[in-house]
Image (cartoon, rainbow, N blue to C red; front, side):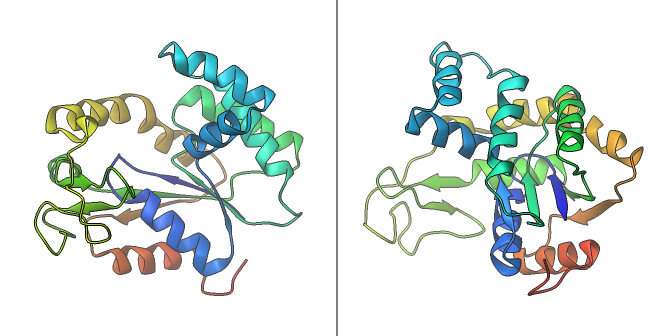
Length: 220
């Protein structure tokens, strides 16, 4: 099964994708992770991507699609895959569809995690990160045991610039303009589109997601 997981930034796609993949033994593709892995490994694709990243430019869609294709080629036949936050725009979706067709594959289901913009801003702007171990906390949802300090190493937490409320609202504007139209795109395809309320507790969202996809622990 090939599942596309969509939703605004901060809705919990990463958390839900990891939980689903870990529980079911599925693989998960996140393009940001692919870019970093290819760059750090110094692969030809990674070297091309690094040039764009160094110049502060977006990595072109054909390069992203090539990385996704290369990653899919490493999976055993019949492997179920979650595409977490990918594709991000209509051109990626079209190229992605054609790429899958060349492999005899298709998007089987789409899950959309939904949340109000104000809730997303509250969630993301409440994040605090540890500069050493990378642990992430949330002032209201998952605060550290000692306010302002990491539970793991006691280092003072910091507030990332891209977690500032005004930056989050800009990211939401980009999502609504570029990614949200993919919902209608997939509604016009053969893949069923499921809507999940992302403003629930993590475990409730995961349960609703599995029910919508028709999968359970041990499914593949």
